[in-house]
Image (cartoon, rainbow, N blue to C red; front, top):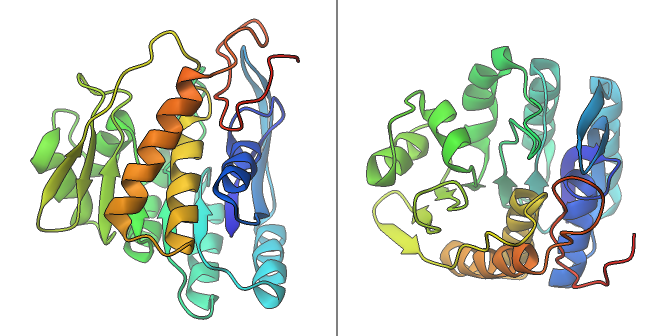
Length: 257
């Protein structure tokens, strides 16, 4: 498994969340870091992008030596990073399934995708991925319409190129994920855990989905499993860790800092 994503110094989201989700799923995780963030539970204090050359080198080094059963993509940040990752995806042998969580805004509200990079994401990444897993706000930005939901929303996203669409339910009126395969809309209902901790939930969901594809699940089964794991991680979230929004707890660890 390869995660192409940003690093969260607080350990709640990004590469750190991905590695924990991979471990929970029972797969080995390799990484290509696209950006370094200085953040904690209170927010993002600084972001520094990794050079395109280094991003490409990380992906190539992993792909040359390890059999990539699936790829998860998270924070890409800017146009140069998007262009680099698009080229790298085309170079991967055997065409592993690719899951993209289009990270745009952190749980704290900090913007993690430059506004001028949205078009590049639509044009260069979405046609190359197997599954896209945005939340409601991200889905509407990608679709270019902030009033869409339900079937119209997933159809608009599917038209941009991904084979499958999962709009996660954390920001919808009902805590129901929407799964779309190009023909049929399937609702994946679940509970809303308002007293949990959700930082890193999107990363955990996408990484779990990618891991389940790597293990042989079909996309709908993988999406169902990912929804359940992410919901449990939120419910068991580390609410008392730090002074702000705590991280999800996918490994069900203790609450010590």
